[in-house]
Figure 1: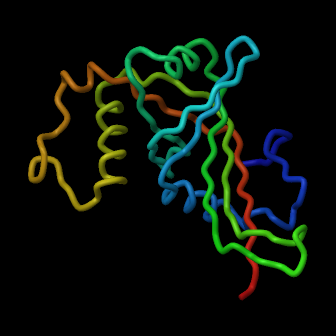
Figure 2 (figure 1 turned 135 degrees about the horizontal axis):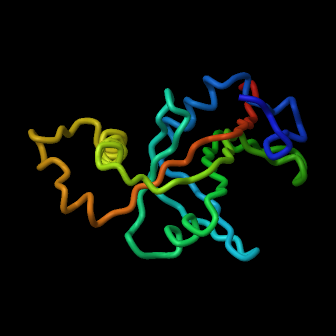
Length: 170
């Protein structure tokens, strides 16, 4: 995946070394933030999500009615971000205090998943990410058609991404 103007880093020394590190953070991040925009008004939506590495796709779900769904249907161009903080780094002067971090930003198009098989798969991937020890049919009733019908699942098709990090030797 190429770096474009949207994902070019000002400080190349902070770039993650490769796509494997970007994918790793997308797999382990506990939540993500989706940015949408309608009529020049930006909106942020924080949610649980899962990353499908082979497809370079992010799945999330929303209610059947609401701002996030309406915004995406009106303008499918989105930005998605995850981040984590590492060690806090004290210093001798106030301006030198810092912290370690890692973050990913991805740009792409979100689409409403309409096919039941993909919708069920996306929702199950969310359950598997957050509850890996629990299995459908053993620990809980699998997703029903009625449940599929009362939720929206979106897939963000990633067009560009970049990862940024700051790591300091101990």
